[in-house]
Structure formats: C-alpha cells, structure tokens
Image (cartoon, one colour):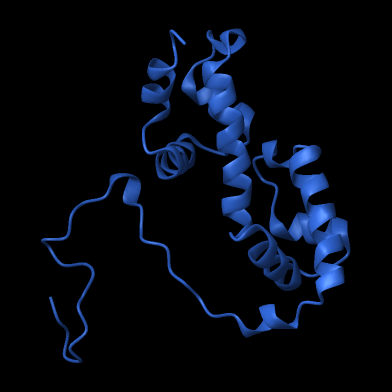
Length: 154
C-alpha cells in the first residue's frame, strides 16, 4: 500500500505475518561511530568481552548497557558505538547471542533434561518467556522445543 508520498507502507494487509513479531533489521547511520579511537576501542572490546562473556554477565536478566558503562567508567553512547563497531551488533543482540548459546548448550545437555524451557530461559539470562522464544527463533530459526527434540538422540 502506498501513502501520499509514493512510499510503500510496510504494514499492508497482504504482508506475511512473521512469527514472534520479528522485524527486518534496520541499518542506521551513526556518525559518532567514526569518532572511536582504535586503541581505546580495542581495550574496551577486551574488557566488554571479559565482563559480558567470560564473567557471564549475560546471565543476569536485567543487565543493561548502563550497568556495563558504569563498570567500564564510560558512557552508554560510547559503549554502544564500540559494541556496534567491534561486535557488529547492538548491546541487546550481543547479550542474546550468548544467552542463546547457553540455552542451546543446556537444551542438549543431559544434566538439564529435567528442566523445562522456562527454567532454561531464566538460567540463560532471559527476563521472560516471550523474549526468550523470540530471540531463540530469530537466531536459531526454530523454537526451543523443536531444538531440544531435534537433539534428543544425538
């Protein structure tokens, strides 16, 4: 459907319904990313990786960019620019990538066979079931239940 300016309206009735209300990724221009000093960005990358991944802060459901910025004694805008340039994704996607890796590991580990999907979701760092299912489907392409079933006898 076109509006008065000849732009196609993405919310047309004939648009395919996407699961979990997923949207296409938008490419944003952010001029401040060009202001990042390489050596400082490299140092911050190492510290971000250590705190988020090595120390598994991603498992904390309410861990935010603001929390990380305070730990690193920087501001969230600069932190976001470094995450975007070094990890090639935004902060929440970074957390979700590692949360989903953790969830996939638990879904296939026999030690967690007695845990239900909601428990694994919480143990992976997701604040709620809906965000877990949406992130899992977006990253893996199937639901957590399907993933577990596909890996039961491996």
